[in-house]
Image (cartoon, rainbow, N blue to C red):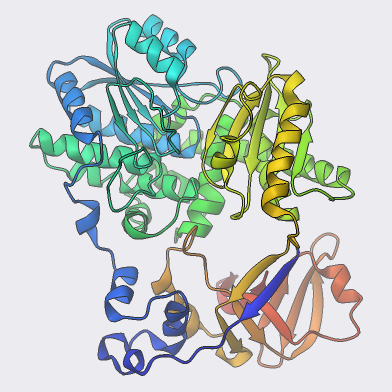
Length: 557
């Protein structure tokens, strides 16, 4: 993707520089905070500290009281509850939270999830039928990370005499499904001050309310914040407000290795300091997602999350790592093939139909295309039922869910999602009609765009400033992720030598006069074609540990 950078040098307000409560942050961190709109002590304190008061607030979301009443009755009367979850990382974590908490309350509880390559996404009539065949005495279905668009599935459950409690976080339409209770912060009429939770965050809130209604200690619910953290990062919801607090507290639990699942993951990967981006976003979340992407059974993943038997978990975590490596290889191979097939991008969107693709990776491929061309991308493949399944990724200027709402009736069989990501399905004969309608929408929204990604540089530093002290000071800004990206630095440096790395010498390492290493991934050919060394770089500082020796390096974007 082509990027252009802007930089706005600011002068820190004197009141911030003189405030004794902020002396420990340093001017570099203060500048980053100030440029992100945090210009008072109160705003900065709220950002850099964890305020659990909002997380633990007993002010209920819309529908929470009804949901608690239904679950409390089922728990007390030992009626069977089936947790109907999604199959991605958020769904697995949300399901594990519900199972762990309800089991602690001695509830009769089971879990169920669709198979990605079978019933597709969301609570459906076939899933309800399977539940009733497996557990005929089921009384309540609790959906987690799905259900807000499950009209057919909920009707089937209600017809069979079941009560349905929906917990979800996806965009809701004006018409809601006929559930007995709906807890979704994005449903019409919701007045909660914070509404950006993932599915695990919503069910965490419900479990807190349920434990309180039963006058039980909420400690077991708080112990699931590690799973909330993983799900929040995996589902790329904003790390702001309550989400930020929950991820920060969840990371503390993860790094304490309190949950055997995370302990086994850390042992298997050799990772010792799990952060939101590096540990959860780039490592653990893709591992969990690989199970459903390759259409394997996700029930075992949930069992791994809640099991206390480390010896049972360890070999399964090793298999999880192997499966993710298989997924990465498949995604890389197919991604390169799709990119080579797109020679000329003259439209405002990228639409691909390839019936040879594995359905589980089309979301990853859509993401690769969006990242490469910086415009909405939709990748379709044909599933075993003969339907076209699509996964879409978008840019800020083109909200997906709202745009799909405007596709003419009769084209789509179903769809759902968020502003930047969505899933959809249609009959093969409707592909051309969808393409025309979708392209017309992107044309209207993006015509005249240069499709460049503009990025603001937070701070410009000299190579002498790229030190361990700087790295240490930046930790206070974490966790980084959606809504709170890692700072982008401009670096002025004087390289004195260059070496090339990788099997094909495709990576570049510059060494500066002060001993700083500047790394450029995949820029080998460009570096060899330069007449001299560059002196300006954009990226971020990082600590490199090699053979027990640590050194600061600068990683270019």
